[in-house]
Length: 77
Image (cartoon, rainbow, N blue to C red; front, side, top):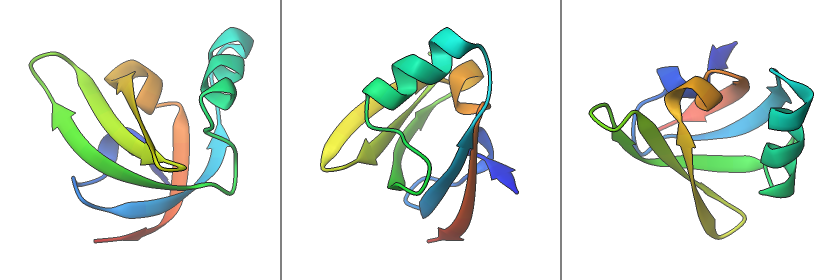
C-alpha cells in the first residue's frame, strides 16, 4: 500500500487509512478525508513541502509530513 506523498500528480486514488497522532487524524477527518473517500492529487510543491488534493469537490493542502500518514490504494493516472 502506498502513502499519499509517494503518488504522482494527477493520480486518483481511494483513501484506505489515516495514521499519526489522534489530533492529526481528527483534523484530517474534519476536512473530509475519511477512509473510502476518492481523492485526486492536484499539485505537489517540494520547496514549500506541501501537496494539494481534491476531495469531495474541495481542495485541501497538506504538509508532506501529514501526507505520509495517509495510506491509499487503487491509484490511477
